[in-house]
Length: 357
Image (cartoon, rainbow, N blue to C red):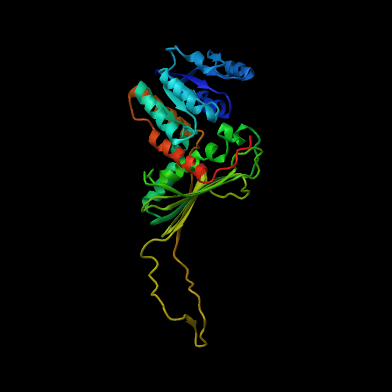
């Protein structure tokens, strides 16, 4: 089987610990790392050991002219995603770019058009949309088992501080740009990436971070005839209990990245209570009576097989491989990824934080 020869830009957490972790797996029979681009000399030396036989270089421009590279993975700093990806596309490389796709919707569209113009592949690493907890949740919610869904809540929360480049607006840092593509992508996905989706409310805040970027965000999405989507991205939540929660008119569904559970009623098992307009009274004494009944309910729970960093990454790269080798459709839509950035851009426009650094 032919392997794709890949160049990886960046050996930080994404380039080394997510993409690189898959490339080094024993069951990876579709990709080999041919080159690593890394500014830090110590990381370049480590890459030589971790990817035997690969070339290492300080700048991505050293890739120009090489005909043996099938794909470049751009895992550079967030603010460099757009300019580096555009340069690579214009030089005839197929590119996978880490999230965030770009700073704004214009840049996303420019990259999509640049890829088309140059006849090369562009794909965005939104592997969460291939993760078991998302795909199974989407299947259950679309099945109608909890009825007509009124609200979907997506929370990527924790309780922690950061003090690195990801806390600086000038570097495209902050929770919404960094973590946001995951919950926003999930929220939009559960709305079917409806083009009529709008941001009804956005609030960004800064609590524990050392920089000037957000570490708290609340974003509300709506689309005609669809549930309200409540998205929360917070580093201030010490008691986070779910990643996805849906409230339907027949039950509730909740999931983490590892497991799910739901509680629901079945039509016909709970006869309709006749409406009582008069004051409810209890007994001959006419004591106050409250509407209380014990509903017949059903419960289900289960565990997801695999994570965003195992199964989803494998599905992603298998999809990229099948596209480049077998001409199949890419696993994820560029237009959907651009919609994620549109929401992020709008949230920042509605409630901008002051730039300090």
